[in-house]
Image (cartoon, rainbow, N blue to C red; front, side, top):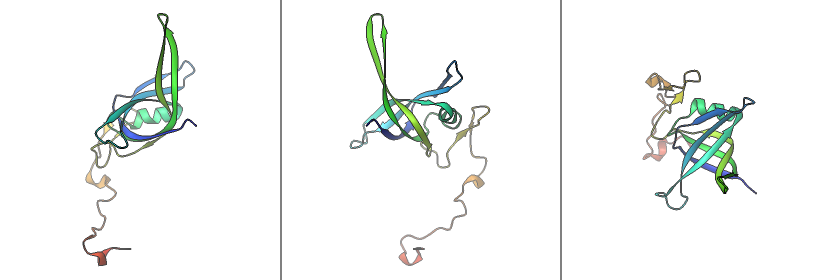
Length: 142
């Protein structure tokens, strides 16, 4: 079985290119914490294809937190008589999570690629939520 599930932050700019047949390919590195040592971070190369690649390039940027499901892929080639290889993660699906350090998140405009900041405090869906005193168990709604 060759299945990978990762959650991390995009650590490089997203590189977008198109194949001669017009298929979109996005590549970037994902910073992922070690499962037992939170101070140890791995920077893993990710490759995304098709509509998912277009969505990642339009709505994500360096620092965005995402979840990736995919598989490990090894590219092999020969250069100057020497065999070379590169291991990467080919993503099948990408879920957009809260960007690192951003409470309400940020998104890129699909037309300009510019990062759009929330326009007002009204963009917060929880702004009018009732505050519950968690020290008083009788006030909890469940």
